[in-house]
Image (cartoon, rainbow, N blue to C red; front, top):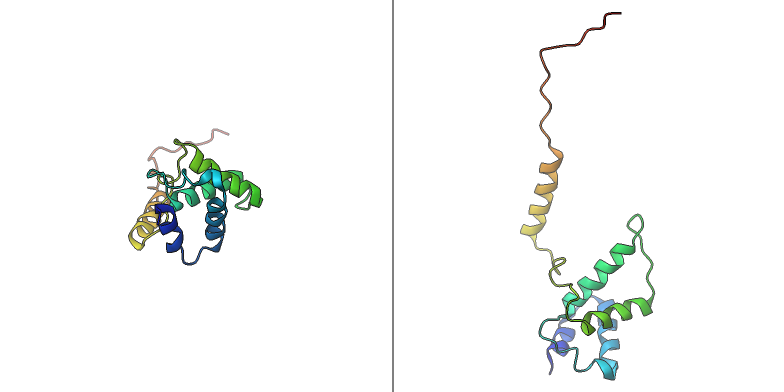
Length: 123
């Protein structure tokens, strides 16, 4: 069994990802590209999601099946297409806490100190 097939069988809940993998496995021109050690199913999914987010307007995006399949093919076709490092495939509790803490810390800005000098109007 190939690396790609093992990753495919490990998918439990993401039916969309399963459909994309099945499509890729059905293409004869993709067989040799799917076992690239630098590529992964999670990386492909992250790449598709990140590309879709770029098209989002007010956190909403509509993307066709053909475009999703095209992005998946592009991910495995090109050596330099990212995906793995762009976003974590699974968010654990500790990294979620760190993200929340960082955003809370950014919102807490020190108040400006009031000057003892006040400008008075001459009129």
